[in-house]
Length: 354
Image 1 (cartoon, rainbow, N blue to C red):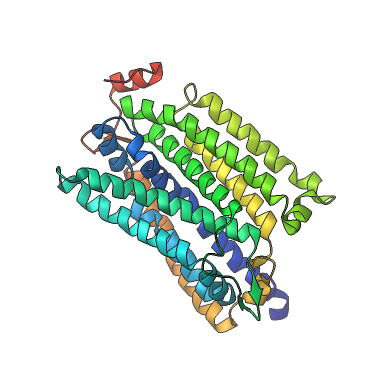
Image 2: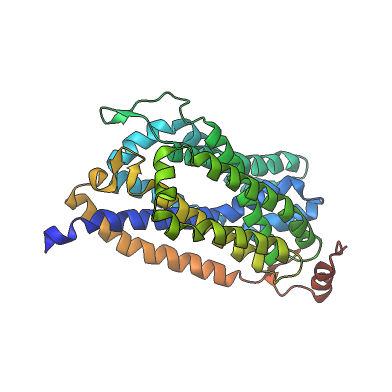
C-alpha cells in the first residue's frame, strides 16, 4: 500500500506548493498593482484612498510568499539549492523592495514634509518586486544550467530577453489586478482613475503575453509540450479562452459590474498559471530535476505534512475573515462601508466625481 502511495506524495506536495504560489500571485498581485499605479494617481487624496484600500490585507497576502519559500526548502531541497543561487539577485532585490513597501505603509501617513519620499518608496518597491518576479519567471521558462547537480550559471544568468518580457508583463498584469481592485473597492474620482488606467495596463498585459508566448515557442521543450499532437488539441482552448477574457475585460471596463475587471483578471492569471504548469511539469528545476527526484525524505515530509494540516486552515480562516470584515467600499476617511450615492453616480457616468 505504501509503495503505491509514494509516487503520489511528491505530486501532492507539488500541488500544495503550486497552490501557495498561485494564491500569493493573486493576493499580493493586486496590492503590488495598487503600488504600481500609485504615482499615476492625479491627486494626493486618491493615493490616500488607494493605500487605505489594501492596508488591512497586504501583510496577510505576503504570508503566502513565506510559506512558498519554506515549502520549497523543506519539501524540495534539491530545487532550493539550485534555484536560489540562480536567482540570488532578483530574490534579494524583491525582498528588499517588499520590506521598503512595508516601511512606507507605516511612515507615509506620519509625515507631510517627506510624504513624497514614502510615495516613491511604495511605488518603487512595488515596481521592483513585480519586475524581479518576472525575471525569475523568465529564467524558469528558459531553463536553469546545471552541472554535477549544482547551478552552473553566473550571477547574472537570470537576465534574459524572455525575463525582461515577463517582468514587463507582470507589471502590466499586476497593474490590471490593482485597477480591478480599485474599481471594486473605491468610488468617485479614484474609481474613474482606476477605470482609465486599466486600459493601458490591459494593453501592456496583452502585448507582453503575446510576446512571451511567441518567444517561449522557441524553447524546444516548451514547444514540444504545446504543439505536438495530440497535445495541441487539448491545450488550444487555453490561449483561446484567455483571449476571450482579455476582450471581455476591455468591453466591461466602463459598462460591467464593479467586480468584473478584478474577477476576469484573476481568471486570466489562473489560465496563465495553467500554461506555466503545462510548460514546466514535472520539473522543480526545469529540464533537470523532477519532483520525484527532488523530494525530501519521508520523515521530513511527515513533519511538513503535520505543519500544513495545522497552519493552512488557520491562514485561510484568518485571511477569509479579514476580507469579510473589510468587504465594503473604502471611504475617504479610510473606513469601510457603503459608497455615497453621488460618488457611485459620478463613477457610473464617467465624471471625475469632484
